[in-house]
Length: 57
Image (cartoon, rainbow, N blue to C red; front, side):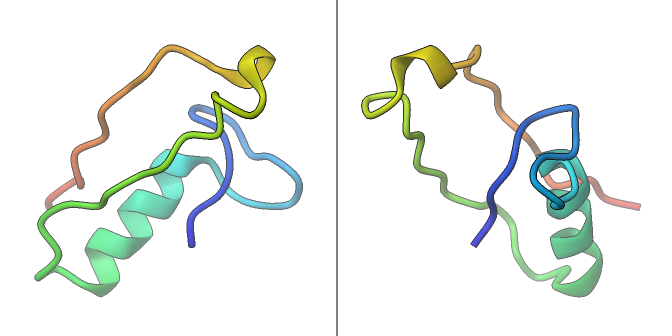
């Protein structure tokens, strides 16, 4: 499970970009990651939706 925020560490966890990079490095066969946003529960937390492609070397 990935949790966090785009562009910054949150609650002791690395940024979502860093987590995605770690997945790509450890599991190169993974082509995409699905996500679930909690904006419907916490509208104030809703940040601009972003896409995050797995970084490839």
